[in-house]
Length: 503
Image 1 (tube, one colour):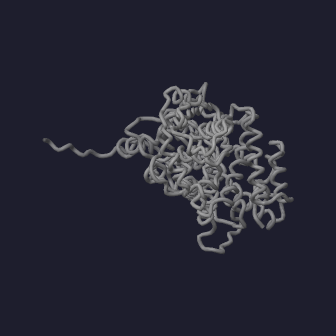
Image 2 (tube, rainbow, N blue to C red):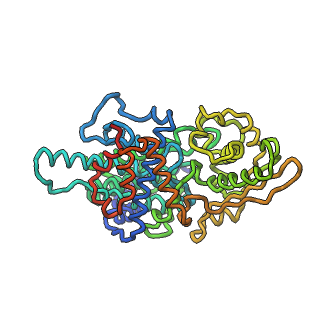
Image 3 (cartoon, one colour):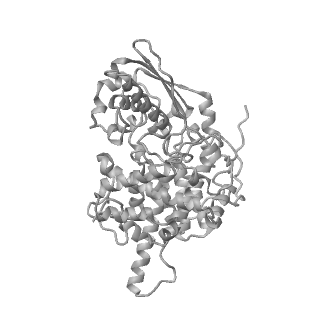
């Protein structure tokens, strides 16, 4: 057999890949005119920061990850990490905030062929904007005059959030990175890099260079989200992506060039090496404001694909108690769950659960705890120190819960006109009684539910008061949540962040 000749590489292809151009054109030139997008962008920011405060209170594991690498370090004009007294450098600030927002799996979510959480990007956006704001204020104070370039205001933060959501969400709709073993936080890195460059004032060419760096990076495997290796890295993977996005943006600002054909170049490009040889991504709609306007807010501390099952389990528990039954674990023979394919892949587990990350990604655990507890599961119920983590009744009941994919639920999940996340639960009792199925299509937090806004606001209030109490400090934060979005947008970023700082 003749040996294949090795030919010289073609070094003429230097036009930036179209995907890079489209993303940066959108970030730098798209004018946001939707009033709903601005309102929901502000709401998404507040919800994400509430999740960060919740993590600080609930997770010792997460608290061990945050703070300066060298204890006691104070960074002048550094990012003030919400809920703490830390003043951090940009990279550690992005890692810490991104991790706190994501750690308890209580931040928002967006469905599609890929599954992800667009608010992860706030971990990169807010530290950069805060640093720019503090740096500008410091120069202004030193020079005792108004700067030509005013400090960033919250309007820029909200705009960056809206656009990061849109980039990540549009990619998620039809591009299944999980099918190639890649973690969805690749999209956090990409979206955060794009908007970070805009916040930093880089040129569009520089932004495309930085974006190419994000695509050419080594990308994390999804292995830490799946059995049998589910672990706490899924809580800080978003923080890692935010930190990397900020770093790549800074490197590019300092002169590093990019790789214009990072996606399409044969043999060495992303499509050839990571994406099964596909020639292009599928982007079913132009970038706009669709994602921020249709994101799913998590009201309950439940993995998004299990939210409908959790609500159905709670309703089912009420029915069982109304029947006058005693210990439900002794009365239930079987719980049959119909659900969507995404839930079957992500949160369908048998066997031992080894840590909190394992438990919060197990639908059987979620259902079992709700039934035994008689109320909705909470973040604390997943922790190692929770009594439910070692209660033998939980594992026993888990064994009686079986999950099957309902093809229509899967189809409705991907249907842009339906966009449900359905699960149905049917219980069989030891006397042979089979209860009618409890079906939930649109769980609390779904953008099409009229009560979503009220529940999101209450969730934020609860998280703020758990962290700061019910005094003036908490009220000053809650007052911002009630601000008109135009008035809110005029705040300088450091003033906003200072309200969340722990003195």
